Image (tube, rainbow, N blue to C red; front, side):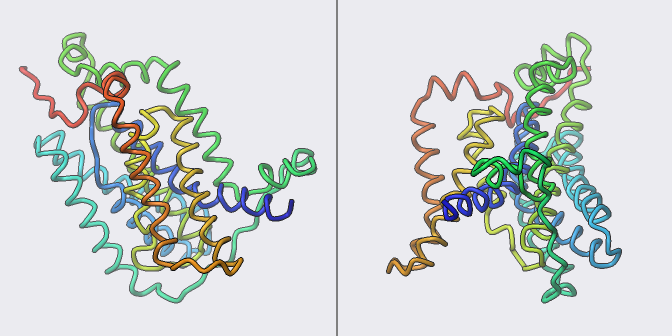
Length: 306
């Protein structure tokens, strides 16, 4: 039972950074913007938050700095694609590469520095429930934030007026523009939210989950977050389940290694990414489901006639 509790807790922790980044990308894509720069935004958010936390000694300052750094990267992407109308795929790839290099350059001064571990916060009463309590109610605060974001994103997209406007922009920006909706302003807002969430995901990795700075520490989690949005068919709850599936496979490889089972470490390391590819191929094979759930204007630049 102790092993099961450990695996569940570790799975949730391993998937949280992906949950945060994927929520941001989901909202961004729902507006019709395809930002492939999640990996770069996460890394810039990670190094910025780590530097701010190291210098200030405040985790709150680090969190705010990481989100602002992610938003700055997203603002650059939005300016290029929404204002200058550059190709979204090319700009997203360039942003990711730029973020990898930028974070490596500024992170050199913080290598080998370790921050104090952030303690788990037990929810009074709930954490005392046998088995379930230690599994779900004794985590770092950012895990609870990710669960609150699940409810917030769902409500925003499907119950709020601005969320429904965002969905309309993602489906048909021309029709939304004809109705008087500020298409580019809505897309700017969605893109900035995506950057903030990517920065927050990087912050969680660098300041809370590890907590230390290592060059390229996201290890492809930004790309996994992008894939999970498609895997989840743009549904918030499925994003969480997909992220925890990835986290579970990541933890499983550690358990296998600790048990002394002789499997090449390289094979174990590739399992989470291989599982993601397999799931994506399976989901993409259902063309009707993909057609019904994909935002109709995803990746398409909107040019106003006025």
